[in-house]
Image (tube, protein in one colour):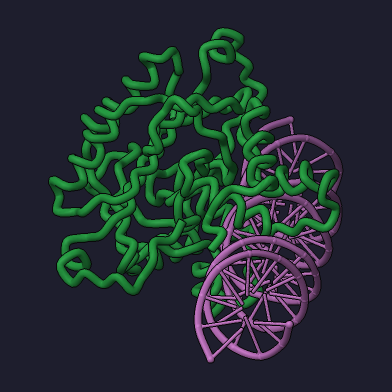
Length: 139
Length: 139
DNA sequence: TCATTTGATGTTACTCTATAACATCTTCGG
DNA sequence: CCGAAGATGTTATAGAGTAACATCAAATGA
């Protein structure tokens, strides 16, 4: 049945995200792919991203409406994202203990957790040392 | 200078959010206010929400693109949100220790945290016991 | 072989979220 | 009164995501 295997386009989008130093929006990816596929539409991008997400190769950044590639080292599990509001870089922090602490906390109040989203905005080491107050923090 | 005091419209939006059992989008609020202010525009809603957010009276739910009122008891600090993907209800869990654990984790990797966003999707006690698998989890 | 089914992909159009840009009004200090 | 500065109104548009339906391609079975 051909199954849900990744095709050339999926891999191309993943490569774009891997090459980027910052999260890319679905429309950034759309623009990037137009060179090779002039008629590609948003729907196709989102379908690829959904596939890649299920495969654990990409992760959505909820607070940026954007997408990042996941380091192949990390397991296909949620990770804590540290998002620099100056340079836009996102670091994926593998802190299983912290994620466990979060799900434990909501479980304690009777909730049944399923999908934790943990994103911390701030400044990365380099930007913090530069202390550039001209940029403002996005949503 | 009139300052950044809350006006009648701000309070009306806050009241809408307090009365709602689920997060409301900016456009839900727009529709709700149109009865009283037929010509109100999205810009005005977002300006009010920004003011209310600064005042600690409302909080944005990043994974839902929606807004909730903050319980007056909680300090004007970030809270952990437990979001039920069945009924849509959002519980604000006051777990300062967990938030501290998250910021500590990213600090350990050299990051300078500023604004943590912690949202856990899953099912509330009631919906979990009903176990309704017909609904699917939104983004 | 050919029809049928089924899932993937293409295509169009749209909804929803959010903000830019500029006009107008208001308030206050002089 | 006059002008500056902030708040608010208004218009238009950008950006994110999806619904609905057409089309295609591979597998299956008569």
